[in-house]
Picture 1 (cartoon, rainbow, N blue to C red):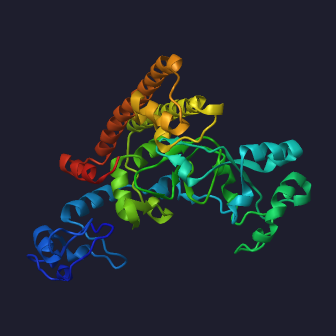
Picture 2: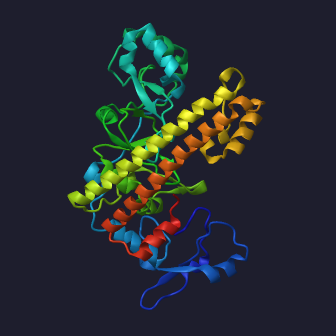
Picture 3: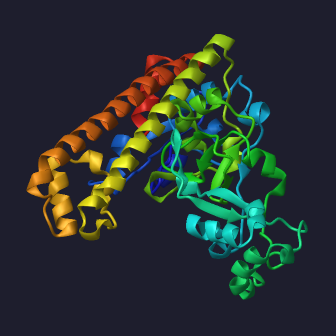
Length: 396
């Protein structure tokens, strides 16, 4: 398969196999140390010319091509079983419509009716594998033609400073209305749904029960369940999806609806579905518990700062990846003072206990995911060689 930054030699159009024309191709992840011609002679792969379709070309060896066909054929698509994925709201001006908790609370204090228009809001980057990481953002949700803005004086006063910019948006709507409110999706926004970010380098699907509305960088699948999220977070499905969707720099892929909706949903007995759903639920519960433990300790770190307030460095935001000596050195570097000697033993004990908790959840997640992955491989009846091909390519 041709990867980001790869080139195809003109010689790929030469060559002929027994009874069928074949092409030779070379996929490059980086510039070869030897000459391109020499690298081509040593590393070129072959594939039947008949695999090149009219719409697009996918250059890959026989093994990946057969595996791709095996995963796709004979199974209903995600669209057929759960419906096509949907995109979140396009505001046309996030700085006007997306607000923080303090602003939200102030608007409700000024006018309690404001609460009718304020919805919990997630951006695409808040949608992670097995979890959401909300920023406590809120969306001023005003679809086209549903209200008189004068009935909501606090909301109107908030939006008025942005009126000139709002009136310059591309589509036609009242200045205080969202550009694409996706009003038809309101029941789906407020129900359980599988959410995912539009651009990612690995599987990032979560069963979201927060009733949050999404930004246009977030997509969701309604009428979904833990069985579906188990499939979507498996290496088998990510291997397939990353081959279908366009690659951009850094190994990231754009998960457009036209690709996600074609993913296969393999047949499974009620017992198999329940088993996979249970494993996915355990993965999500452990991941959410780990997220909460990580965040709780992060909130304590500024206690070491003068005045008790500080913006943490990236290393401190990922404190569980440090040992206590490194943690102490990083806090000293940031806060310009060491942990007080009288408190140091207590902090070390607290740090180590919380780090052990996080590591325990990580071990649980790995155990549940390993079982889940095996169960998905079994649904597709994959061989050991096919599993090895997938796992050699997929980033975990």
